[in-house]
Amino acid sequence: MKVIETRLPGVLVFEPKVFGDARGFFMETWSRQRYREAGITQNFVQDNVSASCKGTLRGLHFQHPKGQGKLVQVYTGAVFDVAVDIRKGSSTFGLWYGVELNGEKRNQMYVPPGFAHGFYVLSDTAMFSYKCTELYSPATEGSILWNDPEISVAWPLDGEPLLSDKDAISVPLNQIPLDRLPDEEFYA
Image 1 (cartoon, one colour):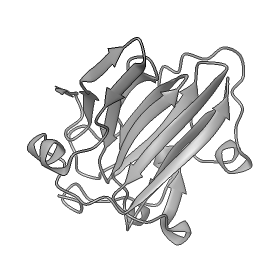
Image 2 (spheres, helix red, strand yellow):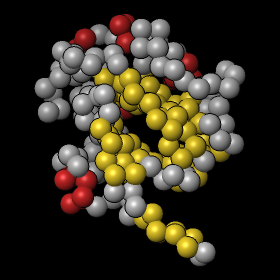
Image 3 (cartoon, rainbow, N blue to C red):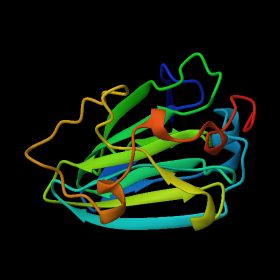
Image 4 (tube, rainbow, N blue to C red):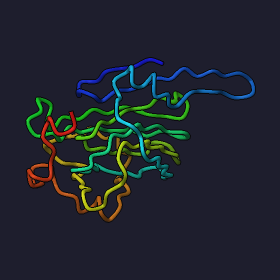
């Protein structure tokens, strides 16, 4: 497995080894030992799958407290996946990193607790998997405006994105009360 560090501390991209032949392929999607060696020390407690059509944008979502680390992967299709550092006091606060995840390359991204996460569907459909370090907590969830001008994510849009009602009314990061955001050390 190849591990790629990004400009955001703790945000990692994985390129697992894929063994294929005329019958199909085999790959390991999770191994506690290998991923711990790469720096993911939290335990995963919940797995989620979403299916979305082209043009769907989900995010930018976070939880605090009870922040979720997420190991994300696309089984079919392709998405542009984004992590945003929302940890107060961090030298990379408000910065984002994005990567295309797709079912052919079978790459993964780890988004640590303390970061907002979102993705945009590039293919006709996409089957997206989340392996989470914390249970979903509606009482502690938050959402940042997907096109916040101060964050300036370079989404590879093809027209107006399809948004949930919740995502359509999200606010910019600078309008979220500071007590709703984690300190840099909170999830260390």
